[in-house]
Length: 374
Ligand code: ZN
Ligand code: ZN
Image (cartoon, rainbow, N blue to C red; front, side):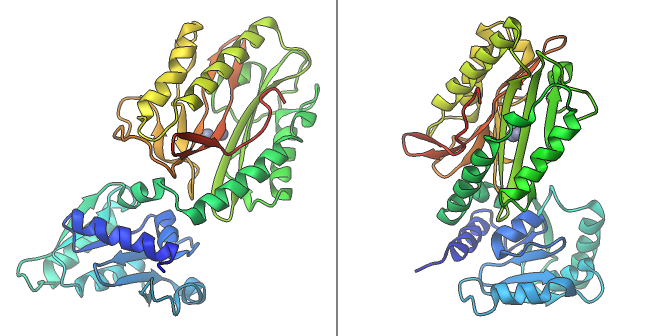
């Protein structure tokens, strides 16, 4: 039986063939972790059709060896950096009989690219004759990561269960007279108590007019009666991120704020109903946007409807129609992403409602389970 990690590597090796690459250099650390299990602040992987190398410095040798020793399905050779990562990487690439070496364009610096290109141009002649070339690639590992395997789904389900349970204690923190920063600190502490390694991002507590800014940072503003308060928080559990937003009011909400909540709630439901295998991200996004437009709030919703969740808090797929976004590839079973429409009206405030979904045959499974009106 093939292990989960063995399957991840085998799929990447098939991508190499499809892209006509002889090797792929992986420098984006979440991708290194995905393939090796190693959670490190530095490292690189070189994948070839028949062998793989994990390059680490002395701090991670023991962890890497423990993870990979004896794993026949992940036949990584571990190389330890002696001088610099660039030197060790250049040395490894120089010894390959590869002519087309893929690199991750989004994570490699121009400095490293030039240094590696120099080494390959001057010091190395592959068997086929001629120098090796570095080929920029985009989202090769990320596309694989977008579809979660069973091991990942189990972790994310547990993370979402813990976040949902913890979230139920949050409304009690939202009390007139407290500051946004007080509440954010309490939420962060509750996230850790719920078993998360850390918050997945800087917790957002945005009250009153601050809530009209989608990514407001918590400040010293004191909550007043009638305020709407956007609470956006998440945690990292066993490496995986989950993310949730609810909007509550301090005391009774004004009729205008109540209407805003109702419209966003309807958009949130419409987008979730649109999630099924084969749906395009732009269609899911449109389902939310159309509802808000019908309520006269088209201009009030200026961000995408959702983002993928996994080893990173924002990853593929992007549920958005915004220009310059990623290719609008249909969603597939195993994808996990947020649905988080919002409406932001200066002078009135803001509302956002966010849940995490898993695409399954015929629709989606709601991973987070928290009452919308708390
Ligand atoms: Zn969020
Ligand atoms: Zn989010």
